[in-house]
Image (cartoon, rainbow, N blue to C red; front, side, top):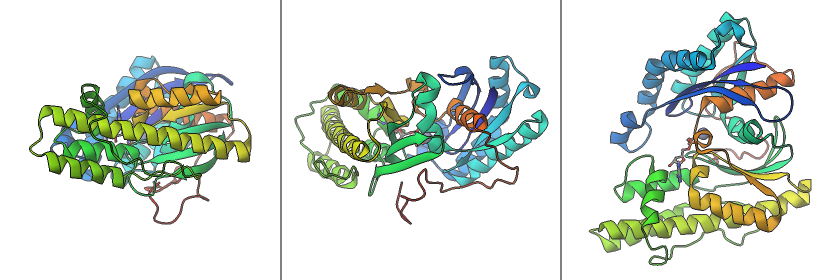
Length: 351
Ligand code: KG4
Ligand code: ZN
């Protein structure tokens, strides 16, 4: 089964062609991602209107490149998948409309994909992981620990009560005068820093329910930064190292609590899967590796290129749904908010 996937929910314009053949991992025939970092960098964050316009400019070329690299034409496709949310609605409309049009041209079914589900299922594309597994989904907008029991069958075990993990990295980077996106910058500066110079709080550690809270930690970093101002390069390195060390401890502790809850409710998970942009962080990966070894399950963290937003994960989620006979009508509307586990999503809560 050959599926084209389009991703435009945030600041990545992406298209990919993926092949799925029964159970087991899939094959990525192409995976083209055009980032918009330069467009948004002056503002220190993603500007929705700029993102939507950049998607319009880039999408045609990105799709053409994905088809060419894969060596296929539109009529070869067995399905076209578009990320329909959650995300910035202007960008979602661009990708979703293109996906519907291409499905029509291909005479193939259209699949509206939940961006979070696509992150959640990436470990099946890369490693053929079987259900059920424990997922840590950590990106700029989302921080969730989820029991993944099947395609479309997700139970949220925990989430953040304030900032998302990636958002905390981005805000700390911004307050320290580092570039956007902040995660990779903070990680790079932390390498040279002393993680013991500043000891920051580790919010939520020890609580049985696997939730996160990051705003207190972020504020603590801000207060230290203000106290030390003007900051030397070494101060910035040490603040980054101290912040990242606190985040690693929090993530490992919260994932441990999620394992416990998972075990009580669903038995033994086949794996711990880390997904989303923050899963690219080396120290976080290593912390999760230690935890997995301790618990006795394997850690599956997608290769770096598949941690951030990409088209392959959308194509794969589309293929998984098509294999179950699921597809969507061309009247499917964009969903700026689209929780993975609707039952667990409290109104107004940031997932
Ligand atoms: O999944 P993603 O590409 O986009 C969405 O937010 O959906 O995640 C982007 C987020 C940003 O907040 C970025 O700072 C963070 O992931 N990130 C990292 C690293 N690389 C990206 N955070 C920590 N360490 C990294 N190496
Ligand atoms: Zn994402």
